[in-house]
Image 1 (spheres, rainbow, N blue to C red):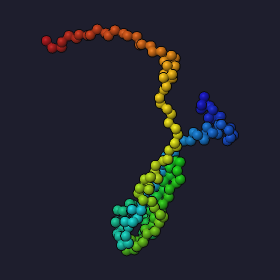
Image 2 (cartoon, helix red, strand yellow; image 1 turned 60 degrees about the vertical axis):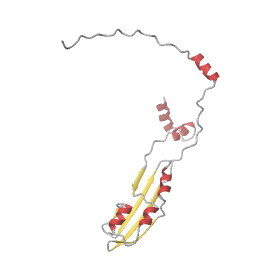
Image 3 (tube, helix red, strand yellow; image 1 turned 90 degrees about the vertical axis):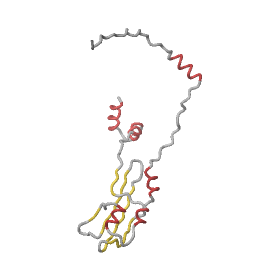
Image 4 (cartoon, rainbow, N blue to C red; image 1 turned 90 degrees about the horizontal axis):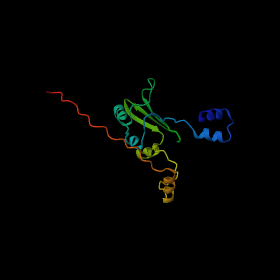
Length: 165
């Protein structure tokens, strides 16, 4: 029945109660995380003169490293989550003679701020009361009297012959 209503609702106009139900039933969308997580602590650890290996140890393998521009690495981070604005950060690192010459990029959050941004805000819906009043309990007992299940006698114990003489 519900499936028929939803199929018919897809053909209806986008106004009215059908549209409200359709907008409430949105499919789950997975989180899309691409690139390297960049934090202030990582960027602050970078120092001019570091080797490529040291930069790779701090920031990880670059997302973009061009064969034609081997003196530049680009670190890109994107995160798309349902119900949140997409996050995007970029950091470019330039080398001269295999040593870090300079780096430039977006402002990046601290590790703590990044972790806090991952928490999805929950809607504060009131929690229903889980306590019944004595009157409600009496009304429930009147509608649903306890019926003892039929008692069946236990089967007699079975005695098996010994296997060994």
